[in-house]
Image (cartoon, rainbow, N blue to C red):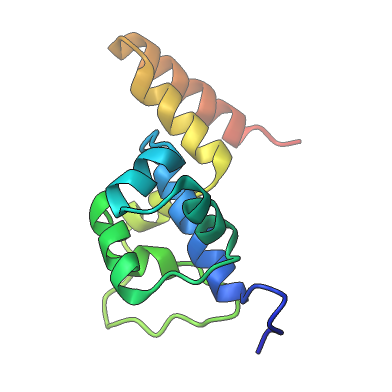
Length: 134
């Protein structure tokens, strides 16, 4: 168990997932705080893991951000997956790969491209770079 002065690693992880999803949506801390009825400073504390998010607040955060509550616990370090009998879907692997700042940046660039040709170019460049051996 973490000491009182240092944030719990689970709280840090959950907070980072809140921040990631908020950024994916292009939502400010102020807007999320407004929708939750709290200050943006409180949102900052949640995102850093300095303050724990209550179950009810986490539920409403998930609703606002359009994800299931489980999203905030995905990829929790040191915890083995004990899922059901189903195999991981390819969509899950793609979403997992996008769950970082670079992935969000790439997804936003793709979303903001104003033509099919630009989206094809972004896709081709990403594929070629990924296939290039260093």
